[in-house]
Structures are given as structure tokens and as C-alpha cells.
Length: 101
Image (cartoon, rainbow, N blue to C red; front, side):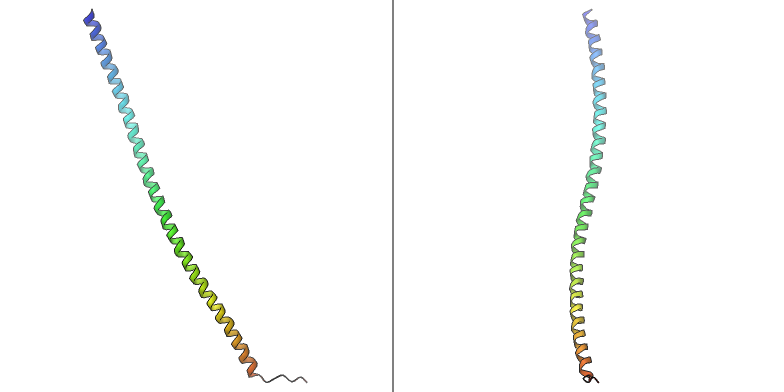
């Protein structure tokens, strides 16, 4: 009877180990899926970081261009003001004084 109990116990434990191994295999598969998802998330985050870096670089370039355009506009405003001053002087100088009468 002792041999029978030992065999039954051995069979029972073998069956339990098989079930545990199957459970662990399922858990391993789930972890693999989770790892794959994390890899995808990491790739997406890396792309987002690269896009943000590109946007920052573009913003700096645009700010530089805006400053250059503002400087050109200021220069044109000064030239225009100077030209108006000269034009008024020329117009006033070309007309004889007004004699009311």
C-alpha cells in the first residue's frame, strides 16, 4: 500500500508541477507582450523627443529670422524718415517764399 501511495503522490506532484509550469509559461508570455509594448512606447517617446528637439531648433531659427526682419524694417523706417526730411527740404527750397496779399 505504501508503494501505491508513493506512486499516487508522485503522479499528483507531477501533475501539479506540469500545471505550475503551464502557469509560468503563460506568465512569461504575458511579460513578453508587456516588454514588447514597453519597447513600442520607448520608440514613440524617442520619436516625440526628436520631434520636440527639431521644433526647438526651428523656433530658434525663426526667432533669428524675425530679429533680422525687424532690423531691416527699422532700417527702412529710418531711411524713409530721412528721405521724407530731405524731400520736404527740397520742396520748401524749390518754392519761392509766399507773399500774402
